[in-house]
Amino acid sequence: MKRLQYHRYGGPDVLTLADAPTPTPGRGQVLVRVRAAAANAMDWKIRRGEMRPMTGRKFPRGVGHDFAGVIERVGEGVTRLQVGDEVLGAARLQDAGAFAEFVIADEPSVAHKPEALTFVQASTLPVVGLTAYQAVTRVGRLQPGQEIFINGCLGGVGRVAVQVATGVGASVTGSCRSGSEADAQQLGVDTVVPFDLDHAPLTGQFDVVFDTAGTLPYATARRMLRPGGRIVDIVPSVTKLARSILPGPYTAFMGRPDSDDLQHVADAAGRGEIVTRISRTVTLGDAIPALIELENAPTSGGGKLVLTID
Image (cartoon, rainbow, N blue to C red; front, side, top):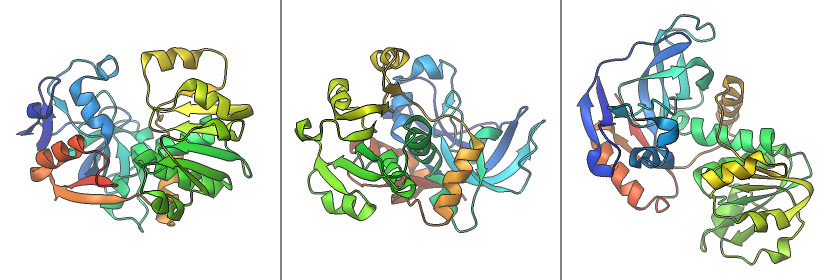
C-alpha cells in the first residue's frame, strides 16, 4: 500500500510517500480501507518530536489520525464492527498512519458513519469532535442554562465545542481573531471577544472555561470562573499536567477513545447538529506540499485539510 511516513523526527523534509506492507489487525482491532483522512495540528507536532514521550521512537512512522473508510478485515474479539461497514475513527497516538490506503484502529476508536455524511465530512470528526464533546460534557459537565467561555472558538475543536455547548442549552462567549466576529456569531457564539481582551470584566462569569488554544493564563481563567466552575485545557505541557493532578478546578485533557461518544458525535453530525468546515481536499499524492502549506499557515484557511484516497 501507499503510505505517508518518516524515518526520524524533524521538519517537513522528513516526509515521504512510500510503499509499505498492508498491516494486519490484531485482537480488538480493525483494518480500514481509507477513503478520506483529515489533518490535525498534532500531526506535525508529533512529526517534529514534540510529543515523543507519548509516541516513542519506533520508525518508520506513519502520519495522520483521523480517517473515514470501509472495514476490510477485523481482528479477533471484534464484535461491534464487521467487514464492509462504513466507518470513521482515529488511529492510535502511538501508531498514527491514517494518511495511507489502509490503516489499523482499535475498535473503541471507531464508529459507524451515518449515511448522510460523505467520507470527506466524516473524516474531519474523530479528533476534534471527540475532544470537544468530552471536554464540554464529560470534563466540564456543562448543563443547560450555564455559561461557557471558549478560548479559540473558531479553531477545529472550538467550532465543535460551540455547537455542543449550544446543543446542551448553554450560553457561549468565545474569543477569536479580529475580523472573524461575524463568523463566530453565525456559528452560535452569543458574545464574541478578541483574543487580547482585558478579561477583568469577565471575572466570575463562567461555569466552564475551555481553553482550546492553550494560551489562557491559569490565573486569568481562574478569575473568570464562578464558584464550583471548571477549567479545561487541551494543549498539554509538563507544567499543565502537574497542575491538573493538584486539587482544584483545572484539568489538562486529551480526548479518550470511546465508541459511544464518537458515535454520538457522528450521529449529531449526520443530523446536521455538528458541522465542520473543510477548506481544501487533495489526493494522497499531493498531500506533502499541502501539509507543508498548512503547517506554515495553520489558521489561514479556516477549515480542515482532507486527503482523499481512491
